[in-house]
Length: 400
Ligand SMILES: *Cc1c(COP(=O)(O)O)cnc(C)c1O
Image (cartoon, rainbow, N blue to C red; front, side, top):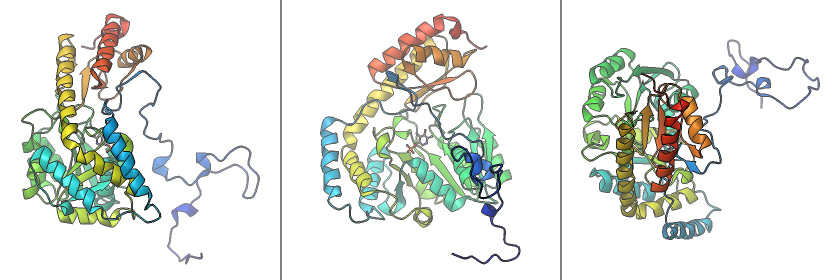
């Protein structure tokens, strides 16, 4: 195809990056490297998202649900996939209103907030949902705001959509000060604000007052990322309760954590019909496969059973927090299925000491802190034994 190479038109790909030393047409030695490709400058030298995937007996590093779907649920998923497979010559339901209705039913069950299916959206993980938010509302000349320390993927959505990225600070206890947050939003006029509640990696939930303070001044869309909402403690609200009064609020959820479905890749969002319409513009056609839709709908049919399992994990989490505090460690209050604890003089040595004992956790968060996911009772016991051992040795030194 022949495009018009009109004067003043700049084709970014025509601006050659640092390429091979030889002239065009020469045969170069070795395989093609990244440096030979016209990679966008902001991506040069960037490593892909990377929690280590190591083969270790106890995996408590990426906040998965330690309990897989039951044999009965897995069998039902298999049957649903077999039925869907009979129709795989056709594209899937592009608007997936059945799945959206099931998700709306689940939200009503879980939080008491009843929404029509048109106010629910889904994609391949809430990461894709939130990238779609940035694709629709971010972009060049626009700004997205969040409050650190927070989820490491947010700046990547901004980078990948050419959106300017600005972070405010959380307080020392990892809460967000409502007036400081509102002041930053007023100053930056972001088209998107991303608030994680409960926050990753700290586990901290935001009171409604913080979300409302941001909503009161935000000129654009405010996303509350509730990936861990099902694990919140009794009395902690969901931002879903604010949706009726705030059409530019979007609440993001996922089936990756509470639903034991990280491998299926289903995330979703609840907002006003207008926000959902914007996401429908940027989504790729047929982005949610028929297989994904079938598996998710089976899981949602069993959501009551699932919420009972979540209650067990919450109790396990509260015990873990108390146990870590009894050891004299600092522990962030957690409304999630993980716990952030510190402060260690050499957190990497402690992380390595745990790994040497067969327990993989996550070296993330502010310096001196480590994050551990809540596992099965057996896994948590292994973690406790290993940590007690590590803390008794040189890697157990505390930062003061
Ligand atoms: C795990 C997590 C998600 C969920 O990601 P998926 O793409 O749905 O698997 C979203 N936000 C935060 C803060 C998370 O920790």
